[in-house]
Image (cartoon, rainbow, N blue to C red; front, side, top):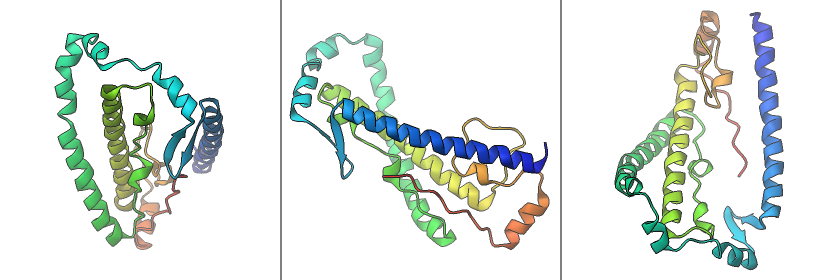
Length: 203
């Protein structure tokens, strides 16, 4: 495929992605109005009558526990045992980026953009469901946070695309150099490993 045509396709993909993200933001605003909640300084706020209505859908703890499958109860400790490696990964990667990214001049990844804990605000969840939701939000948020840090590290050290298309590449990948373009890579090194600025997500 001609290089200019490939770049054109990549530009169209980026434009389409940006348009879809803007549409997603509009849809989220509509959902907030529909379910009557708002965000204030990153915190979820429900109307009181909405919270009262949500509580009528809550399943009591005793009914929730006694209605659970035995297999679910037995595997719960296995699931929650991962909190230790996840917390260590979270801490170690945070220390890594605060040391190395400052040395390399790479934009720091905002942890709050990835680790989002808000589902415990839902009144229709009981205590166990809230704990489960906080854990899932934390685990998936940490993985997304680590992935972004790894992506920016890759953009600094080896921003070369793979020979074949990868599934759901990280945000920096589209700006990488083409696989096999030795001239572009050496020019990039000569320029001092210049990394394109990162587009920060909206808060």
